[in-house]
Image (cartoon, rainbow, N blue to C red; front, top):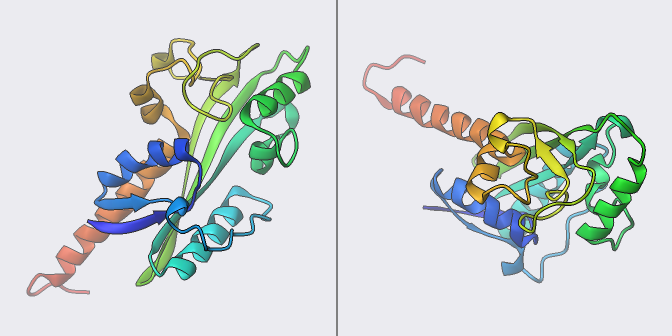
Length: 211
């Protein structure tokens, strides 16, 4: 298997990504394995900018291929907030519970609770151009936190897909969340790209193949 550094210290995010990446032929490690590497600066205005910054930074710092994601919750009634500020919606040192409380406070009395999780993945490899993939999961925000699994805004987010059956991501089985999540959608796009690369390489290497 190829080794790949996933640019996160979030254990929940790494645990969610690792099985999907393993199925793509990657042995993964996180930033906890590189404690001396300076942290990447995430000052981009979009998920794409932040993902590209992180992947490039850690690929250069480790000498390995690197995958970075930038993801967050976008709420329609809040003009797309928290967006790129999802992890620090209640302040720079805020935890998940504080961010969830801040979001519910902003939505008090608001009827439109439509929202989506967005994920942008950037894969930087030393022998190929960078690849950027995006995934989304449409849903809405619950009136109060429900469930004990997951992380981030999972206790508040209810996917619109029928199989969610009105459960928040923190209530849903982990395999269902992985199937419906924004990261799963982005990784499916990444899988398609990698599979096309393999097919293209195989085709190009056949005797008599034309360019």
